[in-house]
Length: 143
Image 1 (cartoon, rainbow, N blue to C red):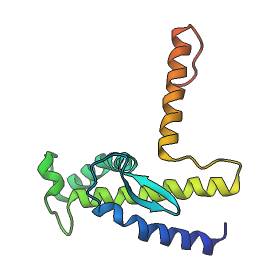
Image 2 (cartoon, helix red, strand yellow):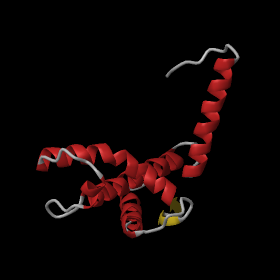
Image 3 (cartoon, rainbow, N blue to C red):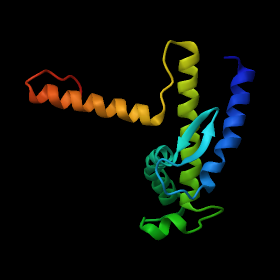
């Protein structure tokens, strides 16, 4: 993939994915945006959002001396934005990066592009197989 094509893909994805922050869907299977032709579901965006919570709390703690991270924390404005806005922006970037990485792997290797639901299903099947192996006295490597 050329730099020009990658940048145009990234810019298009960024503009399309900007709808992710303003989406108010509650259905986890609702499509909240697209990156290239790949739909992003609310469940997937919430996955990336949940990964940002710790770093946002740490950042706001260091910047503003916040020590209480209750539900009001996420909607209070500190500086120019709320912690929830910061988390959403970081989640968008993480989502774009994950998709860019997966698209690059698909273009440069024999890797097949998998949707979030396919990745989740594969992980669940892998974990089930590991549990069955362990319960049957098999050897399981790794954590």
